[in-house]
Image (tube, rainbow, N blue to C red; front, side, top):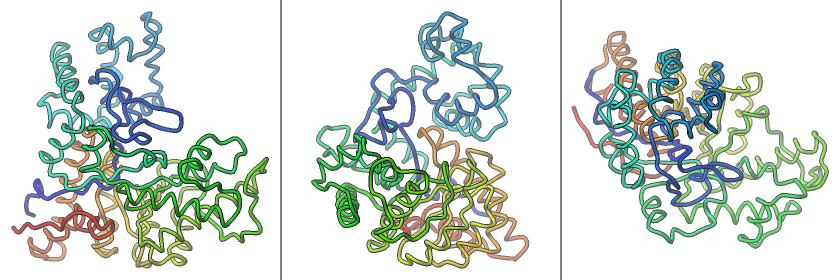
Length: 441
């Protein structure tokens, strides 16, 4: 199997900037709400290492980082790491050893090793501090750093899911202009599903900007259409939702007359409102031929199966439904992609959760799903994590296709084209941006 190290990877679903030094505001991470959001303090190793993914996994494993900090007379672990870094690092090291085999930690570790030539599990405290200083320098010019890494790691395009508020302001400062020069987006529609509340500051802000007050079916259609027009004008190439964290993905068709639009809605009324909004967003995405990224699996496993999405795929045939993550529902997702022309699969987050999930998914899909239906993004909170995830992805794609070569006798150039499709070309076709790979072996 040919070397895939320089085949471009289309970063179809990234969360770069979801780290503590860039911070959060009401509603989400600043990077997802504000154009050109840059760190408001020095960025260090702890910001990259203790990102929302890995820190959450440490907590799930019973590690109480802030509790340790309080015992050391610090307000939080980040404060402790800033005030007495050597002490905090030594306290953290045993927890890292307990998590060192997990995909999330290994993606961070491998990304840091590739970009900074430092293995965080085999360094002294002084080397740890030198790495901290190097990260600080790079994040003082964060968007230039992203561009440098994209070139170094052979990342072709970047799409980030953002909140509707991201589109409310023009790229008027240098940071925002630079970010907009290489970043595309998909607009998260899940916030809209909460806009039935009578007191809803986020809805009020959007109303003022868009000049549409959504209070009935007609005004809600105008509101969504105006918002999507604005998003498209500012680089959006689709929509995204993550309702699978909270409810099933069965969105039933709803008549306008059956919807209660605002007020003290009960659980059934909220469900009807949510279903109506999702269908309207799908209808308008269908009209535009847009992609619709949908979080499936990984959490809320009793309700996050992608199977109910078959109805949306059939009803809105021009909308390109992209099933994100898919684990543990990889067989169900594969069936949907095989038998629905507008359903696609993106393995993003699989290597970060567990590289074996990606290996198993490809083993299942390669002999079943058409090769134009599979994409292999990263879903990382930092560019460093994305690099680590991409190393796993390239290796596992290579292994999976080599296995097919042995079983089926396929020639290397044919398998190389499949790899190019998975890593880049299929996403180019789905999102309508970027260029097809121009490489031969």
